Length: 301
Image (cartoon, rainbow, N blue to C red; front, side, top):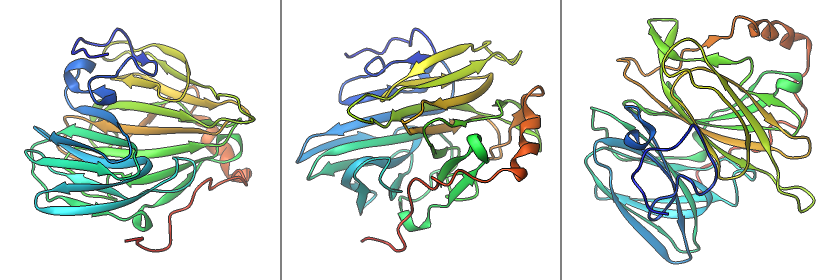
């Protein structure tokens, strides 16, 4: 599939967002918004890919396999990982207005999380050992967040990106929350992309569920989707959550966010009918299955 047409909806099944060399290719034009982008690049053994970053900053994040990233006269060896369920990965940052090459001797799959930006920051390597791993929520709302590109964790101009791992049977992105208005100190205006992978179990493909409901702002986004590996959900506005992992099938999703605000911050507003659930968390233990993955103790290079 090769197209530059806008997407037909907010839930894009695996393959629907493919374009050229990318299994997923979501940019502001196709999404109908201003900032956030996501590409998923699949390379065969010995494969390589060159790209111009244009007006966006990018983080190259291995989903499976490792790669070499060359940009700005620098070469970054990314150790990567076997899969998103096997460990925390290192990554590389690419500035806007630059040229880069990604090469994978053994092949692999690589996410390129992007955001239109103004400042041109230096190309850099992000070691897996420096990625903060956060356990959020408790009980059946327990999940793991790998804050590799979170605001306050790794310097970008506009881009915010994190990974979330939800044990089978749990709910994450809960309570439902939104960030579709600019309210200084209270809420950021951020477009968001969810990219999903669901763990197989007993030879069976896994599924999950994603809800987005209208908040009264923006487009009135309304989604109730059964999601599978390779699916994406676009969230220009609205209350998003829960993200539900089917029992027996751990859920992974990659969040990519960016917006017009001068401050790079993730400030959210809980749904007024469901925010009370947070008050129950101190009385419940965190799911003992967490963390599902760990960051390595040191830089593998």
